[in-house]
Length: 150
Image (cartoon, rainbow, N blue to C red; front, side, top):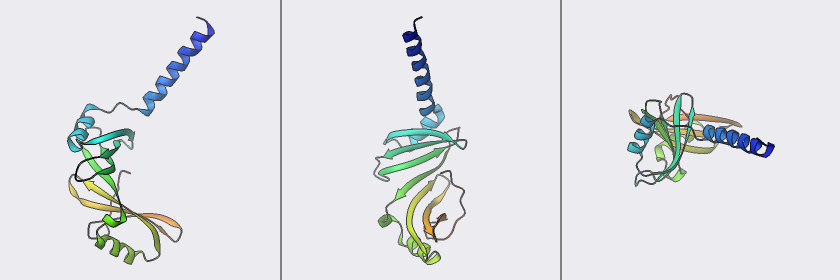
């Protein structure tokens, strides 16, 4: 085998391994659950971390419409989904209570967490005295302990 052929074959093997690492094989049970839960999802990008599968995608359903992340366990059970919210869409109770509890906070961002077996929550990221914090509340703004996947 000449050097050019050998180098070309070597480059193909290395590049195919890199592509395989970037595009993991998603188990069929996970793909079926995702398709059932989000039939109008577009452009999903899958990753595997912390023993679960994460789909970043655009949901084009009439309920969500936008960028989301859905998390599934290895058996295809839906763990939770994260939906970034515009500040104008966050319930006023959540905003009021959060600002009352963290009056020195700034740079608030809100993400709604939808769970198949529980009421929705809000993940609130804020800067408090130059320290980034993440807190969780229910839909009425009451503090909530949550060990999220993201």
